[in-house]
Length: 144
Image 1 (cartoon, rainbow, N blue to C red):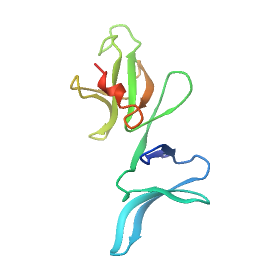
Image 2 (cartoon, one colour; image 1 turned 180 degrees about the vertical axis):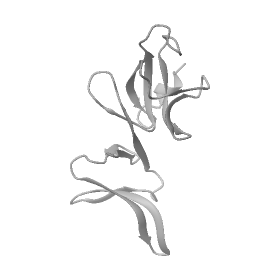
Image 3 (tube, rainbow, N blue to C red; image 1 turned 90 degrees about the vertical axis):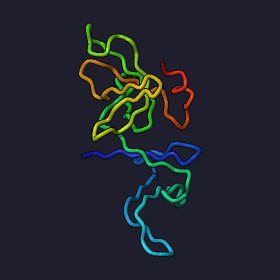
C-alpha cells in the first residue's frame, strides 16, 4: 500500500514524499510524558509543522486520482468537481462540486449547501481537483 499524506502548515501545502520532506506519526516526546501525534520536517532544516502547533492539519491521500489533464492524487479537504459521462447516469449530467471527506470508511464528495454527498469513486464519472479548502475556500461558497 502506497500511503500519501500532505500537511497544511497555515501558509502552504507540504507533500510527504517531496524532496527532503519527512513525516513521523506516532509517539512524540513531551515534558509531561509521551503523546501521540505527527510532525513534518525538512531535511537539513528541522520541523516545519506538527500536530501540536495549533495551525497545521494532516490530510490523507485517497486512492483516487484526478481524471482531467495530468495525473494528480486526490486528498482529503480537496475541492473536486465530478461530472457524469454516461448518459442516464445515476446523478444526471450536472457537474457536482464539493469537499472530499472520509465518511463511514468511504471517500465522498460533500456539498454542504446542497446537503448532498456522492462517492468519490465512480466508474462513469470524471473528477477534477479545483483546489482545496485552505487555499481556495471561495470555491465552496459558490458550489451550488
